[in-house]
Image 1 (spheres, rainbow, N blue to C red):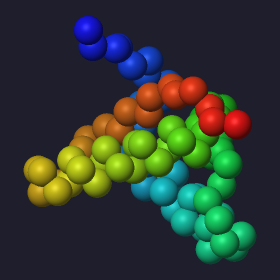
Image 2: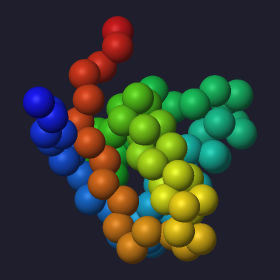
Image 3: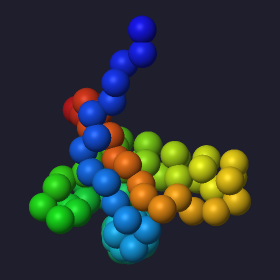
Length: 79
């Protein structure tokens, strides 16, 4: 039985680039990854955005290009 993932947010290429820049800027300033990022009034938690980054990197390696949209799935938080 396959578990259906709930889509939390769908980002365009432009939104994804901005989102990644925000993560990198935070990491450069504070020396760690942010606990969450706000995207259009949606809070994306660290475990959610890390999974999205991994999925995009895998897509690029397999297809030789960036995806047109990036899906961020809702995940349980690890507290």
